[in-house]
Every structure is written in C-alpha cells, then in structure tokens.
Amino acid sequence: TVLVVDFGAQYAQLIARRVREARVYSEIVPSTTPVAEMLARRPAAVILSGGPSSVYAEEAPGLDRALFEAGVPVFGICYGFQLMAQTLGGTVDNTGAREYGRTRLSVTRTGSTLFEGTPEEQTVWMSHGDACSAAPPGFAVTAATEQVPVAAFEDDERRLYGVQYHPEVLHSTHGQQLLEHFLYRGAGLAPTWTTGSIVAEQVAAIRERIGNRRAICGLSGGVDSAVAAALVNKAIGSRLTCVYVDHGLMRKGETEQVEKDFVAATGAQLRVVDASERFLAALAGVTDPEEKRKIIGREFIRVFEQAQAEIVAEAGELGEEVRFLVQGTLYPDVVESGGGTGTANIKSHHNVGGLPEDLQFELVEPLRKLFKDEVRMVGQELGLPEEIVQRQPFPGPGLGIRIVGEVTRERLDLLREADAIARAELTAAGLDRDIWQCPVVLLAQVRSVGVQGDGRTYGHPVVLRPVSSEDAMTADWSRLPYDVLARISTRITNEVPDVNRVVLDITSKPPGTIEWE
Ligand code: XMP
Image (cartoon, rainbow, N blue to C red; front, side):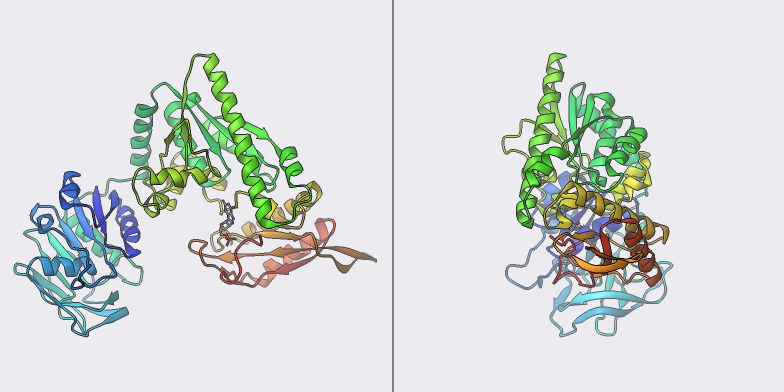
C-alpha cells in the first residue's frame, strides 16, 4: 500500500486516484496519524500531499522526521515538499515568490529519477506562497521555475523525492509520468493492482467474513449497489438475496433491466417487491417537493424492512442465519465522513434511505476502498452489462420528483414515455458520455394551447434538463446540438399524448438545482 498523507487540501483524493491509475494500491491517511502508526502499516511508499498551511504557521501540521529515516520511499508534493525540505535541513521562506496556476518548469539536471524522459521545459500547476530556497543536504535540485530556484529535488540514496508543483492535476502536462517514475523507479513498485486482482481479493475476503451464513442486499438500480451485490454474489452465490423495491417511479424498462440483465449477468437470487400501489396511494394529493421526498423515503424503508423480515424468517425456518447487509458505500463517502469506523455507518445508513439506528445487521461494504470509476471497472470485470455499469445518476425518489404537481399513474406513464424518447435520442447521438444526466420533467400544473393535426390542444409542457457536471455539486446546462434537440422535441410531441410543448432548461447550478424538486 502507498499511503497518501492528507495535509488538508482537496488534493489527497486526487493523488490517491492517480496512484491507483498507475495500478498501485493507495489509501489516504490524515496528517494527524502518528508516524509510528503509518510505519506499522508497512507502506510501500508514502506521499505527502499539498495543504493550505504555511510550514511556518504556528498551527501548521508537522511531521516526525522518523518518517524520513525509516527507509520508506517518500514523495513530497507542494506543502509536503516544503515540510520535507524544512524537516531535513533545507530552507523554506516566504520569498514573495508566489505562483498560482500554469507555470513553466525547467528541468535542470539530466539523469533525474523523476524527470527522466520528460521534456526539459514543461507546464506545471503551481499553487504556493512560501518557497524552498535551499535543498536539504544530500539532495540534488532537479528543476526550477523563473520564480523558484528549487522547484524539485531528489535524494536517490535515501529514496526521498519532492516537487513544489501539483503533478496530480491534469494541467501539469507530465504529472502522471512523474508520479509513475516515483512509484516504479523511485520506490521500485510494480503496477500489479488491477481490477482482476481487486475482484479476487474482495471475493476471498467476503467468503472469509460471511462463511456459510447468509446476506441480503438492497438493489436500487444504480451502479454501486449492483456492483456490490455482484461481488458478494460471486463470493457466496445463492446465500445472498437481493431485494429490489419497485416504487413505480422508475423510468421505462429500468425494473425489467434489473430483473433480467442483472440476474442474467450474475445469476443472483433476486426478489422484486412491487410496491407501486402503496407509493401511489401515499403520494395521492401531495404536491410539495419535500413532502414527496419524505413520503417516498419512508415508504421505501418500510417495504425494504418488510422484505428483510420475510427473508430472515424464511431462513430461520431452515435453521440459517441472515447476519449481513451488503451496501455499496464508496471510498469518497468513507473519506468524507472521517474515514474512521463508525462514521461510515452513518453514511451507509442513508445509502438505503436511512436504516434504523439499532441495525441488527453487520454491514458488508466491498466497495468502501474504491472510487466510482474503479467501481465501474469492477462491474465490467464481473460481466455486468454496460447499461448498468455506465448508468448516469438517477435520484432515489425517481420520477416522483420530476412531476411538478401531484404524482399519478397517468402522469408517470406520460413522463416515462417522454423520458425514454429523450434517452434514446441522446444515446443514438452518442452523447451519453458528454452529459452528466438529462432529467425530463413534466409540468403537470401548467397547460398551454397548441395545435396538432387540425385541432386545438391544451396539454402539458415537458422540460429537458441536460447538464454537464463533475460531481453534481455544480453543473452547467449542456449545449446540445440543435438537430438532436429538434428530434427529441418532434418525437415527444408526436408520440406522447397530452404533451404539446418541449422546453429547454438553460440554467446552471447554482442558481438552479439539477432536479426541479
Ligand atoms: P440536485 O437536484 O440537488 O441533484 O442538483 C444533484 C444530484 O443528486 C441527484 N439527486 C438525488 N439522488 N436521492 C438520490 O439518490 C435524492 O433524493 C436525490 N435528489 C437529487 C440528482 O439526480 C443529481 O444527480
């Protein structure tokens, strides 16, 4: 394992991902972790991340120099670089040499372990106020910028390396290569961490933990729960029961996709609970978005718990114990909730919409060390179909929050048709990877006059909400080609009864959210 020590910037996650892209396994540890504890984990290498502090500030996070004396290869980035310089006897000061953004870097030494094979002049991403003006004894300076004479250094003997810039961001043109040079050449690691090895390792761990007891797993139709279930299924087969609650608010073909494609690909035992009547009854007369969300969340849990209780009872009759609940918790959830044990439980509770506090199950979270793109790769490795693995985000409350107004079966049917057309045309135009998602929203409380055939119509508009985003926290509206928009509009107004207008939402987030409710 390569440990990425997080000094409090947003960069640690990115560094960990880049290391994994180099097919070396990495984990993030907070900088408050004692060095003895880090070393006890026998890391293959340690990377010190950037961070917002100045090494001179009083409350600046420090580092025990024992880390540099343990014989473990260390790579310092930005703040980590300065910390290494300062700890080992170099000079770091506030020279006024601030650099932010794209910066020209000159490699000043041939035969450098990190820069070997990269151009003498390259663009890198800088973000610092303090700068290192003298490398510590034993280090060779390997690169400089116009402002900073010591932008990189290395000590091959002690296997200690550092750069002032951020190789993990894409703006640093040879950043990934540099990181790989540290991993492969500096630390002598081999790129052996592959999706195949993740699957094998997880399957073995799950088998060991669950033994011949039973587990259940809630499937939402999303990528994470499907991949988690597929992994556990590979490990324990028919001793896993998957439960899929059909709340009747899914899009066209989604429930069938889970029923057919998921089972076909995995052979998993699946229970589909058709609860659409129940959800519709609970939603009758409700128009307030928050109230809708609460009702859907509450009903979902009730139905899931009921199914759970049935499975436990049936297994009990056979003398078996259902002790485990499988969840699709991902690494960013774990890191963001503090990375500790216990904190992760809170997070996973709302993965299925809020499990009871006195959960009588032990959680199995086979994806808790993985990033989203890795989960997709594992899904592929497990043979899940593209439609599941490359799925765009879809909200848990489903189409229930895409009908502005009361949710009824008729309206759901209309919206399902309109949504299916939009999705089909976007896919046909090859735009699935360009957009983050494209909600289609039915404005059930609005009517407008139209003309179709020879007659007047008085129907509802639907809204297309295509957005591009990195993480759904912010988003921009996607500039879709006009001809694709035209095809979607024509088809929806022709094929979906009672819809006579298609409008395009051109609002970014903020101020709009992605969904309308
Ligand atoms: P908003 O509308 O807040 O959506 O900009 C951000 C992202 O989250 C999805 N979303 C949800 N996902 N349960 C979910 O699982 C929800 O209640 C929910 N509400 C919004 C939305 O589709 C978008 O990807």
